[in-house]
Length: 127
Length: 144
Image 1 (cartoon, rainbow over the protein chains, first blue to last red):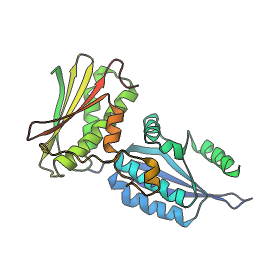
Image 2: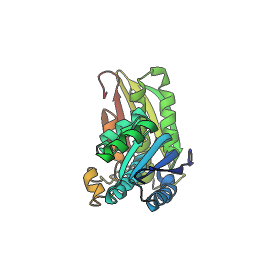
Image 3: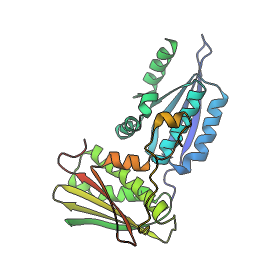
Image 4: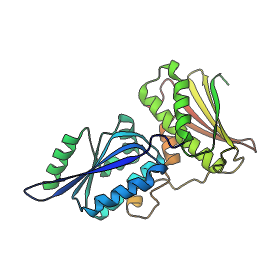
């Protein structure tokens, strides 16, 4: 019983003036043990492009369990090691609460939508 | 004991924790609890069911996890029973995100932490053969 399968898609945005790269990782389905291989594969592709900002889009994610939290922690650890900023949007109220409880929210700014995630994270990056 | 409002069993296979949480949520629909309280209970049920399948029943599909939902006065009680007997579920260290991000602690180990933060009480007992985790939600004055 695998539930709603996980999938991920990568979108790349490059600022014309600074050539800074932002990658948006659009995820859908369930982030649990079944998602591990696909998520790691997608994240490797993100890393290959050496972005300055990584945006995780949770809008189509229906379920995150403790294993999924661990996978997100793993991605965040890699991003911090590479001095990349990681931000998120599209989390439901419940998962925003879980990001607060686990303290993920201390390390990843949470935005309501893509526009605010891109605008505000880029503004912070410039300062 | 209160009123039994739902009782079902699931095979010990990864993924069935989703069915556990959805069936518990369906069984309490008539109580019209706030959505955030329901979401927290669903997460606790899923995590406790995963623990039961993994640590109690070693993911043997034919060894079932038994789930009961009871309503008693102002308490909603969900019991999750496996065949782990007196075997103690390994207590992972208290998750420390700073340590995890620095590679000093495994990124895993969030299950019990989530369970304890999602409900008002977690009671663990055993009858020698079974291992039972009880998740209690206080319907008045509970976790907000």
